[in-house]
Amino acid sequence: MNNSSHSISPKKARVHGPEHQQINHSIFTSNKSKLNGKAYKLLLAINYICLFVGSVASSLLLKFYFNHKGSSRWVSTWVQSVGFPLLLLPIYLPYYLHHFLPKNGQILNRRKPFSSFDMKLLGLSFGIGLMLMISNLCFSWGNSYLPLSTSSLVLSSQLVFILLLSVIIVKQKITFLNLNCVILLTLSCVLLALSSKADRPEGLTTTKYLLGFFSTVCAGLLFALYLPLMEKIYSKVDCYAMVMEMQFVMEATATAVATLAMALAGGFKEMRHESITVFDLGPTKYWVMICFNVVTWQLSFMGAAGMVFLTTSLTGGICMTALMAMNVVGGVVVYGDDFKGQKVVSTLLCLWGFCSYVYGMYLRMTQDTKENNSRSGEDTPPLGLQQEQKKSLLELSEIVTEDHH
Image (cartoon, rainbow, N blue to C red; front, side, top):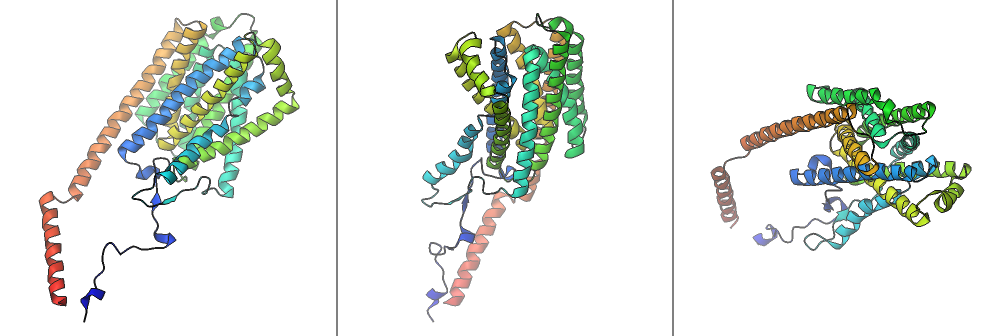
């Protein structure tokens, strides 16, 4: 009997069929649990840079708008979400790049954008998008009345609510590390409230100041609810690309509602009139400022969503709150906001709380890495044993081949 029929060449042993085709994954389409250390850190760094640049720049630009006679709160609300088409870049760019960069000469399956959506996920995205629009409107009202440094530090109060809602919604464990950080940042906000009377701009009445203060607090509360809700939803999400797809739907919803409200309130006519006759730097700089505002807000929301997906809602909230200290510094440097006494102490408390939290997280991650390495070292056979196993398998295959002959 010819034994060649019983031997199978490895080069010819290819299984065809859709169920056995390989799926090409990048850092954007890989499941979070399957990201290796370098890929995870790279994605985390990209998102924090987006959050840092977007948060600081958008706050400064929004204040720039109001400082130069801009007064439409609907316009400042609209620009926070209208840039949602920019999210198509991180959604579709990896998809098409992998089409032109096949692996080993083969065109591999790729995850198609928006292919994992169902009606439940779509409904949740619409609902949270509506909540996001209300939060954006409250933020615009608050920022139009309060100094940038004051509004930024008032928003740090949202961290307490993020912790409480995280415990309720995602069962976040309260530890000394996160509780210490929350207390320090809350004390920072209390010190600000005690010194806020001397921080009012000229001509700002008590009524408008209180309206701005409570609008900012409402914006913080809604965003505090937004973060743990998104963490809960992201636990069912496949990959980072899907996070961006959900963000796209949410911001499209917020933009649709804000656009409808602007149209009904005559906001677009007001916007054109404002650019020509009201804004004191002229229409060209007005539209340049609007475009930059649109881009920076998208960077901020993209970074926030990525931080919540890659870490937790509480860690994302702590990172965003720490950036408020940079907003304070930006307000002082760019706009000359008052910065002395209790505001200095409150900013130092903010930085102290954040740095202690980051250092504690670093120590915990280092310990977890050592434990994982030691555990994997116990499971992996020594190199000499691996070579002996391979030799035994080769000898066994030779014996089987001789028996057939």
